[in-house]
Image (tube, rainbow, N blue to C red; front, side, top):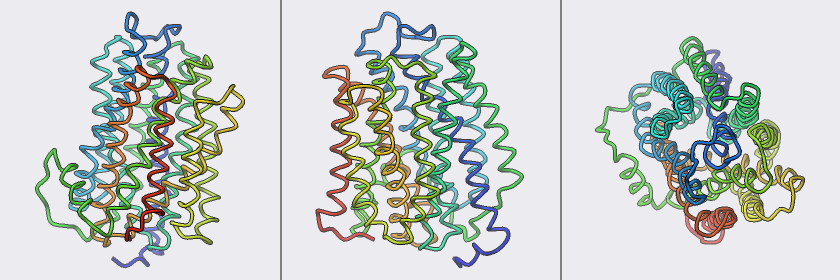
Length: 413
């Protein structure tokens, strides 16, 4: 592929359009963050669905609902990544956004009828559609020179960060204003429909050197991951990425639940708190990352960011009050923003341009696997031992990811 395509007028539209697409996607997805703790772990809420269940069961069910999204992403990410290598990025991205919009409205309906089964089904569908993250990442790689990938992947993080501001804020405050936990999801569905129209009108196709059609099956994620770990040049990167995202998943899964249980947060409080995290993620992706990537390599940045993130996750459940919870935000959001962009860039550098979709699909599958397994483990651990367990284990996972990259001397791209 010729990387000077980034200078062509058509290609110059790709990054801002993808940014807007992912932003709308993340706003809709982020609306669930302040709602799940209220639905499943807050008996004082009028929206509480698990009356009569034990506390341990509530934690486990909350973990399963969160995990379904990641588990379905694990199945779909490598398939969609490779399908986009064959059929193009735009078609697959548009389809994913449309299905995600439908799943959001289904979740809202499930809350309205108080059906746990409908909520589980809608989260599974959302996970399948949400795997379009790997397609967007591949589209960015299509139009980015290798030295610009960490910076351009930062746009994904920036969209994630803005979505993390607006999604939880809107979700929490819409639920608070309407008195209905379902209302945010109807809004998210409408937003998704608008996103489909936006992509159809403004996103150009970025991938023209198509691969040949391959045989796709439901276990593609497992077979691709097995192949990834047999790759002696890239397996350390994949394993570190999995552990790092597993550690962060421990935090994201139960930070809202801990805030509700220990500090009495409402849906609006959770929206505000996670909005604060989003502010720092955006600052990181739009400013801090761009400054640091001009001076330091991906590995130099990860050497510091992963250690800071590991420490912040580990101390999270031991903060004495809400003020300290807020003071911890930059020590979570900034290293997270730096880490996700630079690990993605290292993986992208490790493969040829023709295989970007497959490689980033594999990484997306690893991330999704962590998000599909960790919430269940966090739910079980919290129910059996206590709410501090997911955070301590999460910090250790991130520290282990750091040790793989920098302590064990393994060759990787």
